[in-house]
View 1 (cartoon, rainbow, N blue to C red):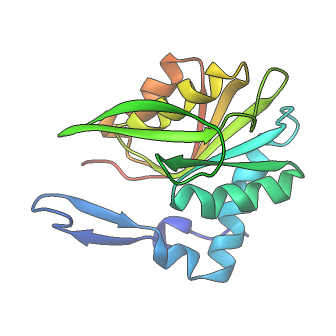
View 2 (view 1 turned 180 degrees about the horizontal axis):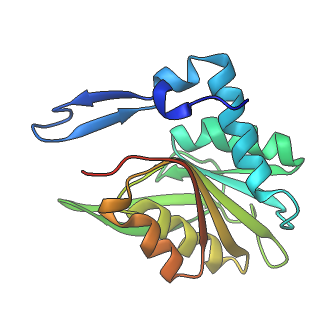
Length: 177
């Protein structure tokens, strides 16, 4: 019998500002059975798809992505904020509500022949995930699948990824904003 993962996610009203309901996955990862099942479900959804690397978006994507990489028997690629990785990197800018941010990977982390699975904890607007897919594809790698623990479908991020030819798997959906 599978766990009700949605019941393990804490909802915090009016955080970080009034009118927002923050979906906090820390309560899920604090539950060993819930955490394990989340990683196993994400891995199982992508088993047999030829994944050669898992990329996780800083920071909570590291938590789930590393576990999925281990479960699939492949390497893990951290997608980090600018200036956090040593050595040669390549970056991708993306728009924020007020300004621009940059994410980076090591220049030699992936390349032609790699089939990369993107993992993060939550998909909302999709801005960071779109930037990560663009960055990974610039190396010549294929990115055809992305997995998330939580989708906020009314915000539309998953649809943006699907428009890029990326199949989206989410374990839980929370309607509304």
